[in-house]
Length: 96
Image (cartoon, rainbow, N blue to C red; front, side, top):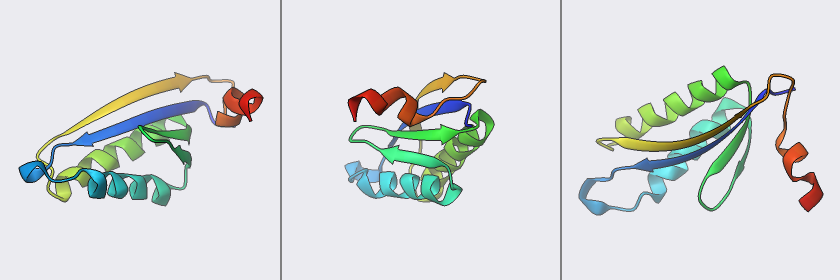
């Protein structure tokens, strides 16, 4: 069972005020290619996995933003670390 849930909102600075959507799409692609379980929400994305693995995904996301032209990136992160295990469904099942 995974030991962490991490919410990530990535806010890349764009050249000339262009839309951030293509950058966000690229960030979500990094998450998808990582193989971790995730859910995209309107303002952030939740990932489920091992804490070290999730932080590595966040690092790749930030590096990719720079590679595709963002001069800097803000990443707002929330972490639930529970060594005995935690899943997204455990926290939301009563609402489904």
